[in-house]
Length: 632
Image 1 (cartoon, rainbow, N blue to C red):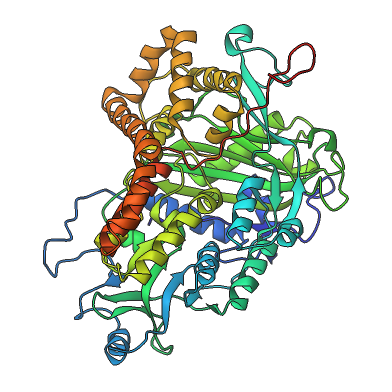
Image 2 (cartoon, helix red, strand yellow; image 1 turned 90 degrees about the vertical axis):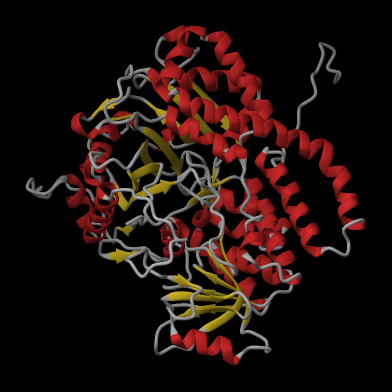
């Protein structure tokens, strides 16, 4: 039931409808999608029909209606349990897989690493192939990217280049859009431009941050280039190959069940890159409902005023909290990105095409609104957000409609339940609960994870207890749950309609004044102690009477839990700065004959580094200039 659905449709013709008859019996969503569903957008999991939207709606309804229950996998019983997608019990699972594993006992397995899920898995595969490992990627569909651009920052692309996954020539080829930066704004009503702070204008605050999510990258081109790079390194790609299950023998290896008519694939280690819809993580989280959900609807369309299409919006509000009656209260956020400007001769102000998203944070209570309701609200409010249009149905040429829901869990990153199987990326929940895209988290953790996996392979440290060190507790990720809680409203919860805008407007005003070394990491989903404590303390000073309302909104238990995570962030920051430099020498000398101890301590030091946000490279501080023009 916990299935991510991201559906895209590409329009083969204009959506201008001034001379057409509108079927008022159908919703605007259905009318638009039926005119943009004649072609599939391409890419693993891509679909483009209104029927696909209804399927996603059904999945969302089943998730809402499901009831959490306690399941103890240590109770040995034949009673009904989760679907056994992964099994380490020789009496269950594919007989073909077990037979092949036994036949290869004492011999070389087919591969060192089998990666399940290719869209983001191809990046892990290439990084591991560069380290000399024999890797196969298994993808249920065609391994190709969608047409919809990914919006990322240049430093994320530079990280892929540093790891030699792509080249500079690749970067230049795959970037199809570039603009200066993105706006963040939190307003009780639409006023643009807006000057001053929340307490100056009683409306909100907005600011622009350069070089954050300001690149539009073609996933189709990027994945094609990484795939070709992987194959050139000797990697193997199995497309149109649906994974039926995984069997695990701690002594012999793992085997992928690809169906009765296809020979199983054996490997020392299986990496689960199938996202948060992964059947492996779903089996492991059997009986659990997500702790939070980010629901997203949107479109990529032409017809906007090119003069208003110069920068992006990374997070923006222009309404107060919406009361949806029995469906609860929702704060709608916006995100928007120009398309096809700044590269390939397309000057700023030359494109009338942009992607707009409306998203909201909530729980998975059965009373929450349907995707259809969110989509209808999107079309209704879009002209207020983009005043250059008045009616999306008649003013826009919609190229593709976008929708998804992203379930998130507090027990992330997910530690492995089985030996020789490790979830990475979205399958492990390593991305921020505030984010609805996992590419930034992938680039941030790619070097760490593939280095640790390579270390584990070379030393045969593939037991689940060893692999758990790779998906260790990261307090800054856990601390972000407080932000999602503060940006959502529970069913039946009473809150002032301006609460979220007041909270975020004041905090972003402070972070902006603290400079790019504070606001930029936050916008890239990296929480650091210096920025966090500095902004919170200033927020308390600037708006002390608001603190009781914040405490009442998030609740004392969650506040205490959050303080614990922040305390661990402080500890991890100190350990990384003061202890890690000493331990690096000790590990290489004193523990040189104990590979497991070396492995464990390396992973702990990585946890300190990434769990405190110390991995983030802060922007350089520009030197101050005095009246004579001299740097000081």
